[in-house]
Image (tube, rainbow, N blue to C red):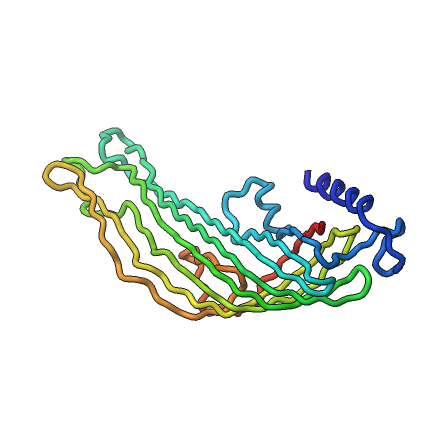
Length: 272
C-alpha cells in the first residue's frame, strides 16, 4: 500500500508539472522537480509511521507536517506530533478463596499509559543545487502530556480478605510545555514534487506539571471503600530536547544522566 501511494503521487506529479528548461531541476521528461512560490507540502515521519502499519499500540513520537512556500527558498511550516505509550506488568499470587492443593494462582496486573501531543510553528529557509536541497530555521512549540497507572488485583477484597489499603489508580498530573528551538536538514527530490529527507531538531523547553491524584481501596464497615487524594503539583523546569512537544517519560526510563542529542526524523514529503 505504501509503495502504491508513492507510485500514484509520482505519476501525478510527472504529468501535472509545467516543463522547465534547467536540466538541474527537471527530470528527463522536462517536469519541474522543486517546490515554488505558492506551493503547499504535506509530509510525515516515515520511520514512526511504519510502526502504525505494523499494528503497534505504542510509539514514542509520530509526526506529520505541512508547509506553505512564500518563495522557492522560504516557507512557513506547522508540525504536529503524537506520542503514545502503553505497557502492562503481570504478577501472580495465591488464590485466597481456594482450599485446593496446590493452590491455584490469580493474576495482578499493573498498567501504565501515557499520551502526548505537540504542535510547533516555524519559519524555514532553503538553498541547494539540483535535486539536493538543504534547509534550516526556527520554530515555536507547544506540548501537553498526561500519564496514569492502574492496578487490577486478582484477589478481591472481602470480609475474609482485607490486605489493607492498596492502590487502584494513580494519575501523575498533566504537563504543559512551551519551547523555542531550531532545525536543520536536507532532502532529495526522487521525483517531481516528491522528496525524501532527514531533519534534526533541538530546543529549549519550559514545562510545568499539575497536581497528581491517587485512588486507593480498603475494606471498611463490611464494604469496599475507595478514597481519592490529591497530591502536590509537580516541578516546573527547563530542559533541552527536540521540538515539538515532548519526550514521553515512561516512568522507568528517566532522562537524567543521558547525553542530550537532537532528534532525527526521516521524512517523505509531497508538494502540490
